[in-house]
Length: 248
Image (tube, rainbow, N blue to C red):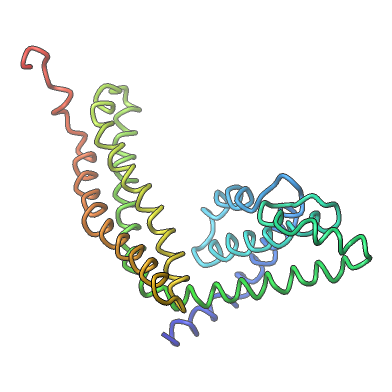
């Protein structure tokens, strides 16, 4: 495990990756400090740019921009009593009250320090929980790739004008797509459960263990059916389209 951590540090401290992180931090600082623009919006606008980047810098850019946008939402909340992001709304009144007393620097300093501590703590917990989530992530990536291939196959059929054939496979496609969406939601819940499970005891520990086990069940017994359906979708089968009313 330590070898992987050392290798990860080497990737992060690459000069190009560090430059990307600085640019992403400035971008996140701007978006988060403008009321009405959220960290989610910052990520959504940044994702298309990352398509043209290597994986490590791309992930670093998204994580940096999101973390910086969440922190910088405290700036207008502290100075103007207008939270920059929804995450800053909980303590806007208290931060603004400190500003009116001439303690704006202390309020923003506390926000910066505790944002950094919370981020580091969350990262450490995620590193410890990563082995339990690795199986889910690997399975999800494989299913997502199969769904993308099926989407491309149906899109090609539609582009050549055979809309009826594409629609004849729409039901199976929506079923596969729905499974992928639910799989993504379960993966998010598993990440939260894995983080919270460390240090939990009694009924609380049982609750988080049940979340992880339910996610494992869905991935092994439900999500595993999607690749076979995507293979069928990739063939653009015309069985449903060929059905005749007179046969029923």
